[in-house]
Image (tube, rainbow, N blue to C red):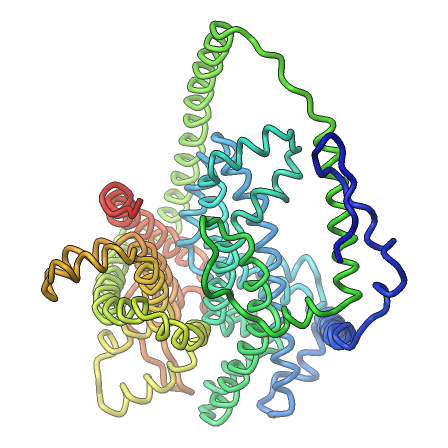
Length: 597
C-alpha cells in the first residue's frame, strides 16, 4: 500500500511520511538480511583495500608483487577498487564539465575542443607527467602511486562519458524543458529531476564501455615505469607485467581467468542492477516489450525495510520539489515590442561577447602551440619533428586499414545479430565480456608466433591495435540494426530487393549513423592502443613496429620528456585533424541524409 496523499486545489502536492504506516513496515524480512550481508561484505572489502592503499611506499620493497596464486584475490580487489575510484571521478567530472559545456556557450567554446584533444592524448602521456606530481604530493606513501594509477585509468574513461552526457543535455525534448520551467524548478532540482534521468540510459551504457576500455591500460597504470621511477602496485596489471617478464604462461592464464571472474562479478552486482533500474528513465512513446532483468535488483525490490527507507527518501525529495514549486511566481508579461527589443539587444551583446571570448581562446591556444613548438625546437630540432610526423603517418595508415578490415568483418555480423532479437539476447553478454577483455594479455602469444615463424613485426603487430577497440563497431551496428524500423524491412521484402540492392539502399543507410559513432570510437581507441601494440615483449624478446606509438612508448620508458611531449603533440594533431576532415563530415552526412525521423 502506498503512502496516503494530501491534495491541495486538485493537485497532488505532498505525501504523508511513509514511516507513519505502522510498525509492520519497519520489520525486515529475509531479503533485507541478504542485502545487508552483501553491503557489509562490500564495505569490509572497500575498507581493507583503502587501508592498504595508504601503506608506506617502502612496504612494496618488503613485500613485492609475486606470482603466488594465493595473492590473486587481494590483487583483484586492489585493481577493482582503482577502476571504480576512477569511474566515480569520471562521473563527477562528467556532471560538472559536461553540464557547464551544455549550459554556457562561452564554456562550450573551450571545453568541447579541449575534450576532443584530451581524448586523443595517450594514457601513457598523462602517466609520464602525473607520476612525479602525485609521488611528490604523498611522499613515502603508496597513496601517491595509487593516485597516479587511478588518474591514468580516469583518462581512459572520462572523455567518452562527458561527451555522452553533453549530447544528452543538448537533446532534451522541448516539452520536458518547458514543463520544468513552468513549475519553476531550481537549477539543482532541474538537474536531479530532468537532466540526469533523461541522460541516464546513455550515460550508463557509456560508463560500462569506459569500464571495459580501461582494462586495456591496467598493466601500464599498475606497473609504472617512467625513466628512473619504477613502481609495481599490487594488482592484476602488475601480475600480468611480471608474468610476461618471467615468461610464465600459466600465470598469464590465471590472471585472465581472474579478470573474467571480476568482470562477471561487477557486471552482476553493479551494472545489471543499474541498467534494470534506469530502464524507467527511457524516453519513449510505448513501453518496451522486453525489459532488462537483474536478480539483485529484484532482491532489493523485495527487501521491505529498504523499500520503506526508499519511500521516505522519495517523500523528502517530494517535499523539496513542492517547496520549490510554491516559491515560483509568474513572470510579468511585457508588450511584444519590448520583448523583441530586449531580445535583439541580448542577441547583439551575445554575439559581440562570443567574438571577444573566441578571440581570447584562439590567442591562448596560439600561445600554447607556440610554447610547445619553441620547447621542441630548442630541445630536439626540426629534424626530430619531421621524424615524429613520419612515424605518425605510418600509424595513420595502420589505423585506416585496420578500421576498414574490422568494418568489413563486424558490420555484416552486427546486422545479422541486430535483425534477430533472439541472437542479440544471446550475443550481448558474450560481446560485453570480450569488450572488457584486455587484449594486451595476448601480446606474448603474438610475440612468440612472430619470432617462431619469422614474420614482419611492422605488419603482424598491427592487428593488436584493434583487438580491444573493434567491439565498438559491433555494438553500435547491432544497436542500429535492432532499431531499424519494421515497416522499412517489410517494404524491402515486398519490393523483392536483391541482396546487394538491399544492402546499398536499405540497411547500410539505416545503420550509417550508428556505424559512424562506433568507427569514430574504434579509431580513437586504436591510436591510443598503438602505444602498447607497436612495442610488444615476452621476457627478453622485444619486438617493435615503426610508428608513433612505439616512438612514445620508448620515450616514456627512457624518461625522455621532450620526445614524449613531441609524440603526444603529433598524435593529438593527427587525431584531431582526422576527426575534423573525416568523421565530422560523416556525422553531418548521417544527420542530413540518413536520419530515421
